[in-house]
Image 1: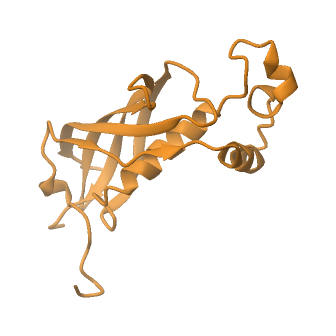
Image 2 (image 1 turned 90 degrees about the vertical axis):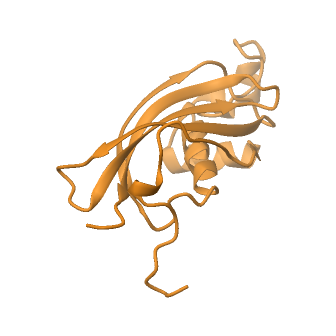
Length: 154
């Protein structure tokens, strides 16, 4: 492969209805602590064992935003758009249940549409529906979003 050859699928290579399943990843205390440090979100629901004992979940839970980041990282492991991804355009998201330390997450992604990107020459828009499932197959979070992908021909 040439150093200038793009890896990953171009806009033209995606088809509506394609479905993908990512590898899985377990959420650890280190993940939550590092995310809290990065975002300065030290909310007790994420970081205080004592505060959570009598709380809604009975234990600490991962940040919702962390689960979204993990979902994007897991999708990147599919190598679908290694060199062709340009950026995110929009996202709508909902959280169904808490992600606890030790939960193993898997992402299911479906291509729900694609369209020309008249505002972005050389690119197209890919619409995705994404679910994040835990080790019990429960959907903990889901959403839709559009990404900008390079076209094979500008």
